[in-house]
Length: 156
Image (cartoon, rainbow, N blue to C red; front, side, top):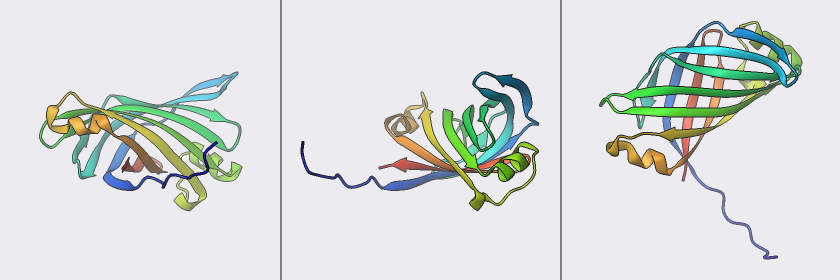
């Protein structure tokens, strides 16, 4: 086995999103955990790419126990130049049992008390933005009572 460590990749800020969300729909407890679906209503995108979040997406949540949630959000961005971009964000949200309970009740919490990170897949058929298909992205998130804020970073 070789003795080497490759340098870590750099992160380059892509954009910030403010996504307005609906009231969670509680599907109930399955053997895998508590299922919830949260409608994505609209939102804004600013940064290297800018535009808006189109209505019609959703965040499919699986709550494991009192401290951990796996989130899978799918939605479409419409950029200022008319290009459409599909986003799939697979995130992990972890907090103490008390903070998680407050999140699930829709109460505000300090973002320092929540680990909210995601792996973002972005795809588009618009040639002007084809480089988005050729990168990996990460995000940092914050859940507010009726909104999710995220910053996307390209892994360089």
